[in-house]
Length: 112
Ligand code: 5GP
Ligand code: ZN
Image (tube, rainbow, N blue to C red; front, side):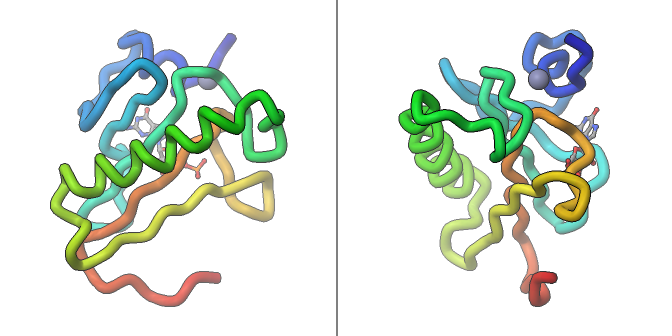
């Protein structure tokens, strides 16, 4: 499958790794839009929120716990941060392997 993030997870495309475990991989976004901009992806290829199945529910919980751990590791937990998952064309999704943007390091503006 021709998926950039699957290639990053496999190490076929280089990335600046922030965190890895059995289920998750996290790395710095190549075009950051905040002082800290990290992408958290499940190793399982799921195209978007619209493709999550009930079987993926435990994995989704692990992603949230992973985000908490990664945010602490990045020193974001005191000031706070934002987590964003763009979905489909109106959501501005450009890579169709589900991912969670962690954005922090400055006061962020209103969404939308
Ligand atoms: P989306 O627009 O789908 O929500 O987010 C995709 C993100 O992936 C974008 O912020 C983009 O900068 C990032 N991105 C795309 N290709 C690469 C890549 O090859 N390496 C890294 N580190 N980030 C990428
Ligand atoms: Zn993928």
